[in-house]
Each structure stands twice: as structure tokens, then as C-alpha cells.
Length: 114
Image (cartoon, rainbow, N blue to C red; front, side, top):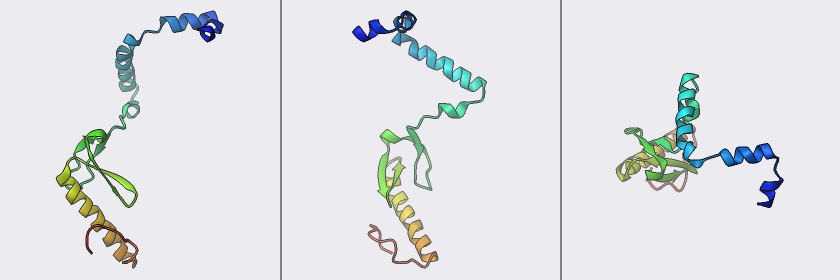
């Protein structure tokens, strides 16, 4: 409280007028303003992603996804079946790329046979 009392009077008045209940309403105002001025990309929520299975590509929440790390990259899948096929497909693409580059033995420690 001592720090608060050392603030200028104008700042203390502003702090005292702040109400946490206004946040949902302010969010609606921000969304409307972003839409009005064409700044919709600022509303992008980083918690959403697409399923990494190239045969699915469903939009999913990262928190609810099945995450798999392949070649030090995180890949998110919508369920275990997509993770199984998607992981195989990603490894297949890495192996195919390695063969076209003449580096057949460069990708090691992969869980699927060549």
C-alpha cells in the first residue's frame, strides 16, 4: 500500500476506477474494432492448430491434441489414429527427401523401417 500512496494522484484515481468485470465487455469492443479496421489477424489465437496428418488437416486445440515430436519438431494430431498414420507419413517424406538428396543413411533412429 505504501507504493500505491507514492503514486501521483491521477494514477491512483485511474487504478481505483479499474474493474475486472469490464474485461469481457472490453474484449467485445476490441473484436469489433479489429473487424472494423481490417485487423482480424491480430485476433488469431495461438492455441489452435491443424492436424499434422496430411489426410485430415482438421482444426484442433493444441491442449486437446496428441503431440508427437519428429526430427525435433512438434506435430499435433487430432487423435491416435491420425497420429499413427501422420507420423508414418512424415517419416516417409523425410526418408524420400533423403533418398533424392543422396543421403540415404543421414536420417537415423526413425521408428519405421525403410
